[in-house]
Image (cartoon, rainbow, N blue to C red; front, side, top):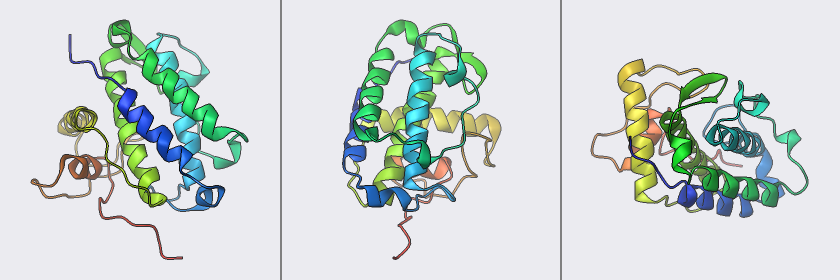
Length: 199
């Protein structure tokens, strides 16, 4: 069986970033073109629901093709409700059975170990998206970054450097000796030097 990962540290960091967002942040730009912070938060909410069901081998609406991110869907208590959902997500993937056999995510049947890695990558990379867009510090744990990087390197080795529909934008070149997080960001189509546009 392949390595499993504790999604707790990445989920906890992402929850802390959500707690640090003000309502004014929701309309701000993120490193993903055309996606506001509010849209990204909604995406985190949707993916959390999906990966909870994936861990339990449940096929349903949440594990089908993901909806387009839309910050107008956020509930009034989104900070606490999404934090609770992220905690549930991490707990669901603590089960060894979540990483075994086949499951569904994004409307596709995939091995559990692959879906778990996708979930890890989503938590780490979208944590950076939100941190950078809201000017919050972000230092994900080394094992989470390494696990996400190894997953994305494997995808790029088999699928190439172009856009991957529903997953990555085209690769942004990053020096080979750059920190692991920067290399992960570049492989997912993000510029590690991105900063919010000046007001």
